[in-house]
Length: 287
Figure 1 (cartoon, helix red, strand yellow):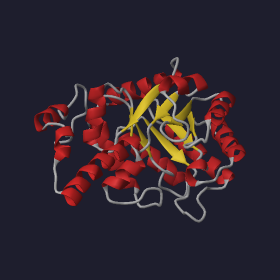
Figure 2 (tube, rainbow, N blue to C red):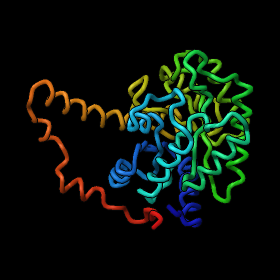
Figure 3 (cartoon, one colour):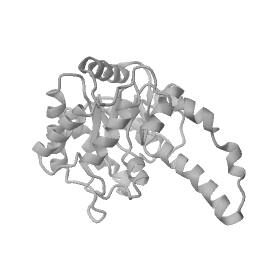
Figure 4 (spheres, one colour):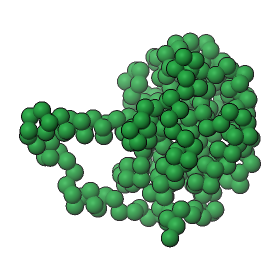
């Protein structure tokens, strides 16, 4: 897939400006090209990948280092090609142990057509899930430097993963977000913040835009999250899990009851075919 440099610059600028505009916007997480086309058709104007959605599609668990960089970027490349809008990638811990490897991941992400990515401080080791803060800051610094070296705006999100991995240490989470801000991250993100006050505090004490994960913790709407100070709202693996939920309900009905009533709620074949038409401005695949 070849993305014209002018098109990539346009996408990168649009994503950057979305974070600078008034109010909050939703970045919709797609797990493959088909879901990206559906989200684009519904009117979402910024997309992101989901490591969990990709892992589930490949029959793997998420968060335990079972995806490699090539798989993540191949998935991202397909999503970029399916939409004319900006795409940011969930690159987990950037698939490298050194600053040089992290920088290479960001460079390859740009080659894949991405205009943003996240780097997290998780290790993928359930017994020791979070990196020491000094190590994590060095890694964010390397990712930021690589992003700044690109010839278009590339939005780098730094993630503090404590709550996602059961470490309910708000003070440490906030300290990490502040350190990642000082290291130059464009967006700060702590998945699974436990309550409204935690979201409000994070958004009020940081000067950079904050991404909030919807559907986990307090059940809040876009206007409610915006009022708390969120600038960007993401869904993580929620759409992918919703699709899995529909599939499992249908398969269980057939297996357990021998009936097919689920078909009444399935998207008709002709409509599905139409929905998968490439949107105007989507990238072209290499011949």
